[in-house]
Length: 259
Image 1 (cartoon, rainbow, N blue to C red):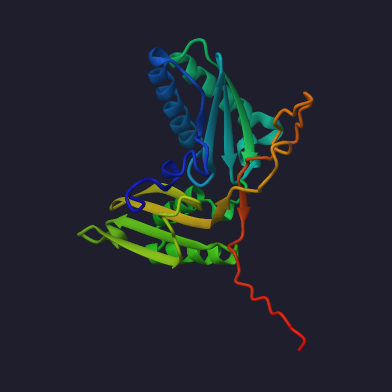
Image 2 (cartoon, one colour; image 1 turned 90 degrees about the vertical axis):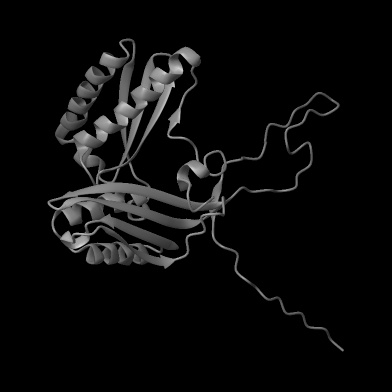
């Protein structure tokens, strides 16, 4: 199962949240889904490869808030905000052609870990392939940067007419571990296409960034926020936000007993 399915979709609801967060009825669900798809395609086309990590979309009534996670936010915003202003205008015009009542708001944020972001890594490899750099060199350089940034594991697969060969093939490079079946494993996935003179080369990247565990602490009903007999309520409920933890280390405790 873990070998076939998209690692991001496989972990939604467990350790990841969906990139689109809104509710709709049966009549408008299809329209909203198509608009989200067109928004992401438009942004990636306008900004190009190697810049956009992901695009989050939230809806509240007719307001559509688009958050762009970029490796270099300054390149998206531009001088005095001219870049983001033009992008917002073009995006609003495109969306109004599909949904006349929608009002688009665009935010730009920096990607938390660009060196460990699978989509940015895949785009970078695809750009190098388009510049006629060897696929083996591009893959090994990406793995080297991953190791220098304390990555846990990484796998890269390039498929197509590699090096201009007449017969298409696939080649891969792997370092560390990629536990695809472990749902608590934070695995990022990225896909990019390199348009070369001898055909299209697909690039897939898996990045393992550690395990995400929810804190499970045994607490009394009062600490969990239940109502007491006297009518008072304790509001300090524990947080359910997932936290990134290091892998447990084996520790040996030695005891000394006096004779």
